[in-house]
Image (cartoon, rainbow, N blue to C red):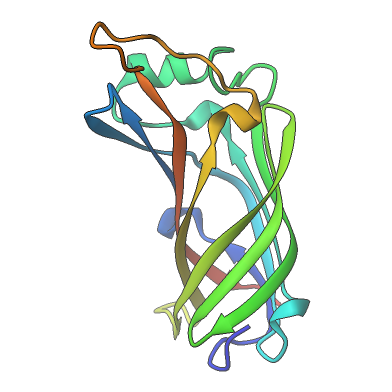
Length: 181
């Protein structure tokens, strides 16, 4: 994956990672949120990025935007349908080194039972041995999806003629992974 990363199996550390999103609200401001990790693992091959892989499962019921009423609405069938689809998943199908510390991870993102292929540009942010002697690697990046591609079509028209919620949602990632094998 990266010459200074150590080849092996990693578990993404939910206490030091963020799986976030940003959507425009009322077309004048942005709402930021995050969805907690249920499970997330990666195999990193320092010598051959293409041999690397990532598997992530997020807990829809734990969505947080800083507003309980909005969070509750996002869990309903209008948006993520936490009761019917409790997880968002990502399964990589390819990893590509695009130069320097930059990579592209392509895979299948499943939201509300709808699967689409996306590519996530990620930057390697470093490797360190922490206070417990564990090897950690870091990556960060973001990509934009259209929520309608995943069956999330709820919206409201504003008096000014615009819509309440943007179709485009930015997914952002700040990841710390601990080597387990």
